[in-house]
Amino acid sequence: MKKGLSAGRVQSVAVKMIIEREREIENFKPEEYWSIEADFLKDKDTFEGAFYGINGKKRELANKEEVDEVLGSLKGKEFTIDKVNKRERKRNPSQPFTTSSLQQEAARKLNFRARKTMMVAQQLYEGIDLGKKQGITGLITYMRTDSTRISESAKKESASYIEENFGKEYLGTYKKGKNAEGAQDAHEAIRPTSIYRDPKSLKSILSRDQYRLYKLIWDRFAASQMAPAVMDTMTVHLVNQGVEFRASGSKVKFKGFMKVYIEGRDDNKKEEDKLLPDLEEGMVIKAEEIRPNQHFTQPPPRYTEARLVKTMEEQGLGRPSTYAPTLDTIQRRGYVTLDNKRFVPTELGEIVTDLLSEFFPEIIDVDFTVKMENDLDSIEEGKTQWIQIIGGFYEGFDKRLKKADEEMEKIEIKDEPAGIDCENCGHEMVYKMGRYGKFLACSNFPECRNTKPILKEIGVKCPKCKEGNVVERKSKKRRTFYGCDRYPECDFISWDKPIARPCPKCDSLLVEKKSKKGTQIQCTNCDYKEETQN
Image 1: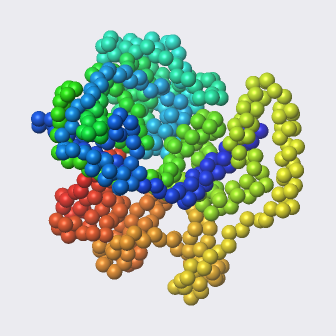
Image 2: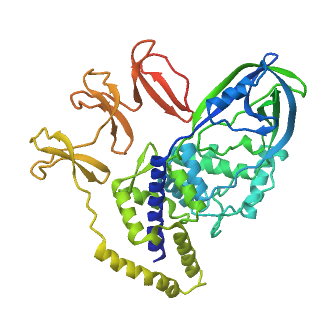
Image 3: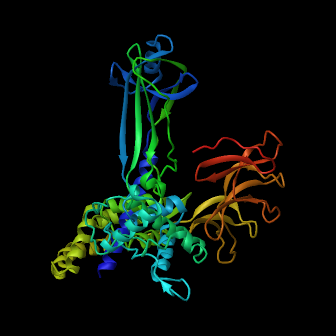
């Protein structure tokens, strides 16, 4: 009973969150803002600074007129260093993995879907055959947990390993992090069952996916038991006629846990030392170049699996065991799809959610759902009688159910004319809704069973036949690739997105190559490359 009530509610709320985010994006109105950056030169060293404010007060720049006003008040390009702040800063390691944080980090670093992460983690938990001496051995602790707690024996073992392999100075004092509100703390954090089984020693035994996930879990746990990193930071205030620019830099003084692991970021940016030259108060520094830059605010991003899991956890929705099944179910039922690894609601999802909002608003209300989760936990722990909770819920639900049965219209997504004729029988083609979204079908069904995928053109002529257009397609595993719309007459395909302009070096096809560092435009024939864009 608990599983059914809880899962259904969380799925409905998850779909609602995705739809609300999509509507935020649709209704978003970008706002203009500006920044001013400068390249400063000290001897032969160049460093970058940014406009901060005037006469010590921070100022935002809303338009070009305000930028021109600031630039007009500068006298020459020489700035005096008004203040230099140097300090030492400690950075603590991340806590060991919970189910949620493991799914998020596996998405960032390994490109794993939530379902795949849990499947591979299950294999590591159930055990891997390590040979005659050790037999089938579980490599990690239970992977459905919301706790960051670590057993005393694991702490002692990790301390011995760290001292032996890194040195005493790398030993940390582990402090249990604060669990998320509503966390049950029934199991330890996700960690290796023995830190002495390092990933390198198991690489030949594990599959590629098992090794990568095990290494991620091992690295995170080992780092959590190590000393903080120590950073030297420096902030410099540069002033010209009261106009203040600031430059910041930092470098790692002692790596500590960073020798093993650094938590990933959603923007995929890597952390690097940003060094400043030796600067002192009173020095006069020349700005080689001052650049005003126009920007526009961006809409909130669509949810990735990792970001949706994180938001659900923050709001107290679901439990460690429900995150992956929830994301899987709402996709299988056709309420949402993944586009470029981000959730997009389908027409069916929007219709169902709007009807639920009208007739069963409490089912997709976050606060009500969280309260019901807590009430069900209370029943499970024997603190509350189930008949009291279910009775209170069912009284109002029964009335709404009867009203919905009488007034709710049957959901029917009507076929839409596509404006083209079927090449087999001449009848009009229509858009239909299927398991994987919309597709083209002949209106003369079932006499004519002609169907086609809806092809998305990318504005590039086919480089092979020169007649067709390159369109976006989906493989059986829902992976995006690109091919000619004249298939099967032309068999051109590419996993990388083609670019409309030719290579300036050899006139061949340019494509977008995606990696963790960003997107880079490359030639398919020669060594021509363009700068990577994040």
